[in-house]
Image 1 (cartoon, rainbow, N blue to C red):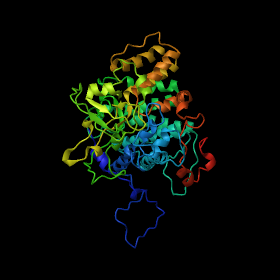
Image 2 (image 1 turned 90 degrees about the horizontal axis):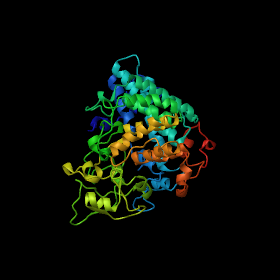
Image 3 (image 1 turned 180 degrees about the horizontal axis):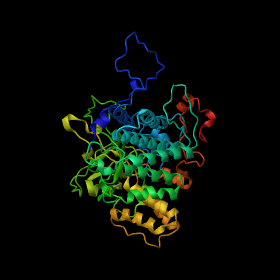
Image 4 (image 1 turned 90 degrees about the vertical axis):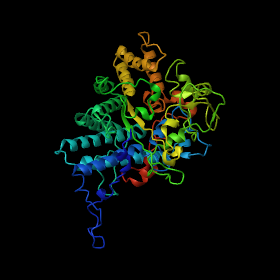
Length: 518
């Protein structure tokens, strides 16, 4: 299900952000559409438009060239190679894959800008909308707080200390120094706690055009995740358990793991929060290569570069994979991380035998690949359209799942383990293993270090291609152990560099404030 108004109303609200110090005259005529920022955000309709603009940044994957936050979070891990046509194809992505990170990288710059634009748009609502108003207005302010928390969590995870803006800057010369990440985490928690008190349950929006909106379970789940990431395992348990206690009513696991990243389960029982995409019906003659188009073109970018039909094959599954542009192919170490009987493996990555067996196709190995094909977030025919003469390569509409209930269970397992509640930790992991099929439960013999290793493995195989692996390794202190052979340098690559554009443009940040090693 898609919410077309969400993606088609791409209101930047530039008029609403005009500073009151600007000239009061424009050729003696009041410009049409001009709105004083101090007088905007006062009605429900105005705040609704502003909120659409704040949500819009979640799926701005071509803000500055190819610069998807989703891709950026996945690239440094050992689960994927960069791929592409050759070593110079999308150099900003190739550099991240090779740990050749620099403050000039356009992808890193875009990651920073996309999330700060999200913060800015949320701040306009939070600082201007009347709180003592209708229930709807209060709910929309709570949504803005959730979004601000989400964007800041993205920023603090990948950059460390970042400037904490809680109100919009008053002029372009206003600067702000980097804020210690502990303070940023504290503000994220505050926003999520306040949002959770107001936001309705997930089921309130189910089956409606509002299913994309932040909900109580998303806020509590994200709060638990933030606390786990910051090392507050004790504090993480309560919000995570609040979500788990609604299992069967508000949240649950989808029965079929292989459907988790398909359109059929969008905004479904397992998905707590998503970035939404729609089709514009583009053709090669109408397509725009910027953020003005709102299909998920990174699915096409990430499909296997060349697929052929195997003559006479009788595939076991319906549907086919389309050839893509070859980015983010899986690695052999990811394939090997799955137990051979784990039902999740086929829903994530296939070798040549699996591709032939299930889909009657063969993969022509290309640049930076290891002969494997991903089946999670990939170019299935069912995920795009030719309707009305549309070009299939340009009309994928699959949503990114930004927070799943499975992640909540895994986070709870980790929190329980760190609080000495090993039986509870195993119970969380076993829910996912039972859904996967073909696996035996972890029993009491899986304890201590073996249980932690199981948590590490289960997060990897359950959340592959969802942007967690690399940042998990960093926060566990395992990145050097697992990734040094790929180029990871301890003391440097735990975070991205602050973009050069921010150092040049923000008077509050000087070159010596850059992250170590850059």
